[in-house]
Amino acid sequence: MTAKFMMTAELSPRNVNFVIPTHVAIIMDGNGRWAKARGLPRIAGHKEGASAVKLAIESAIKYGVRYLTLFSFSSENWKRPADEISDLMGLLRRYLRSEIAELHKNDIRLRVIGDRLDLNSDIVDLIEDCERRTVKNTTLDLVIALSYGSRKELTNVVKNLAKKSVTGEISVDEIDESMITQCLETSDIPDPDLLIRTSGEKRISNFLLWQLAYAELVFIDCLWPDFNETEFTSAISEFSRRERRFGSTV
Image (cartoon, rainbow, N blue to C red; front, top):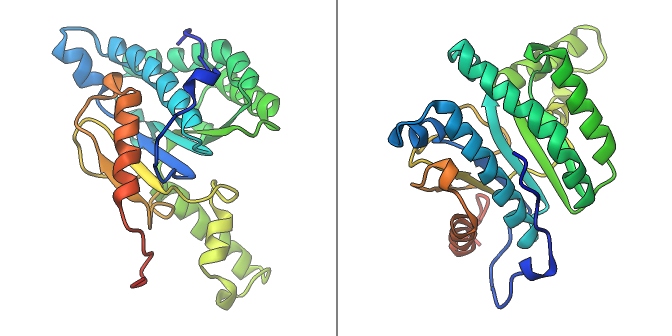
């Protein structure tokens, strides 16, 4: 993805009375189907999907969203054909190299969650460099879920707390929801208020299972490469109409 961000004053929404979620999470689904429908190789869909990422970032900043988490590659995606994985990793490398300056210029902090042990060392180095260079940026936290699976994340939390209990560092009675939350990769990020999934699929696919406990879920029929500001605005509008009670009656 080489197109540059267009963060200008003209992007500020006018006369819009939306309730803006602090944290939006998106399952970016449908790249392969988009390419297949056009008789193109799957990589063409992934490339077009990268442009949709740019539009999602611009839209998040436009409407004042503080955190944007994108599910880009799941732990299950490693089961895909080797050539597709290679193409995806190549796209990731190009993104990290070409867009970091734009992210930094627009005060965007990049964060990556997921298992880095499965990634090539050069990609890990690029991620760490991007995270380091943007760590003080505050307009938007862009969180990329890469080689991420929520069950694996929660399993690791359980293992770590069990080890601490065995060694006497903590007691079993001390383990509560707050402690578990602090052990997650998203420990310093508020839980998502809104989850968007494209392509018409209506499931969360092992994504942020703990963190999405009280998120509003919006499922959009468009395939991810077709996602644009109109789709983003529609999801925000739907979120604004929801009544969030968090288990209470008020």
